Length: 73
Image (cartoon, rainbow, N blue to C red):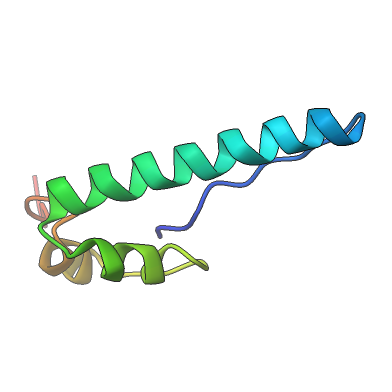
């Protein structure tokens, strides 16, 4: 499963604003890393991480998240 990170914010409005900016920065950074390492276009990563995206092991290989699936020892 891939999804965007979550965070909780509390405190004064300026504290919440700072935390929101940090979450947005981290989301962009993570999406770029995923795009670089999976070979997926950034816009696909952004769309796929907007909500929970569940994948089978084989789908994870096709997506580029894992190299291979080990079926037996």
